[in-house]
Image (spheres, rainbow, N blue to C red):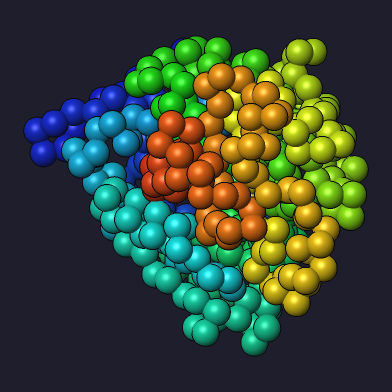
Length: 363
């Protein structure tokens, strides 16, 4: 059981786990000669993928997100005077809005640099950019192309780095998915043990592309005891290294990772049905071929009824959604669809991550 500490703000009080309480003061270490001190920063905690976090840490982040959401707008401005630099090589709606509002709600400020403001690794090396920007900000969020770019960026940064999306992983999205599932199936419980019990034994079905959302699910959900049924077209298989890690990280013998031969097989007996875009940013030239590859993968109510999921099944999609991926009957279903609750929860989970990374534990 984590020790509890009391935070006060304008006469109101909030209770948070100690590991999430940031130290409200400037960092005391010297910022000069940063390149000479790279080795000394090797233990700095980043948020590049949930693969680097334990099941307990993931649950703590989700539970703290729920607390922050429940106590808003009375959350203390514990990030007063702190700044996050947001550098995005790709477009963003939910991640940008969620991060800027989360930082503002906690008293901090944001600096957004889009692809027209900065070209990561083009006009200036990732190494040089990381050293410079981290000398001026308290945290960095970057949306990149290759995952190796965010890893390189974190290597030379003197402050925590958050992956806002790479071709390999998208950790803030999966945290939001987990908070949404906790709210829908678990109610308002704030007990960590209750969250563990809720997740353990659930079944998620993935129907769609072999992409970063799926990979992030594979490196995180099994740690929580969540089984995963996966259906991707033959032309888009799951990488062997991701599959191996998923199987090795399973919470218990009842947690299963199953590669299914069809969408209906994946959906059968599942609690949560998930899909994503088939044509990610940068793949527009492949659209014609991809639409052929994904024939039969559009999620419809008829498909779901034939597949036979659990009675209280729900549907999720990280957005933006295209008509070929899921029909309106499923996407806008008041009974089953959680897509807009899922989108809002990006804010609260990113807020939890910011609070954790900017705590004195990580500075």
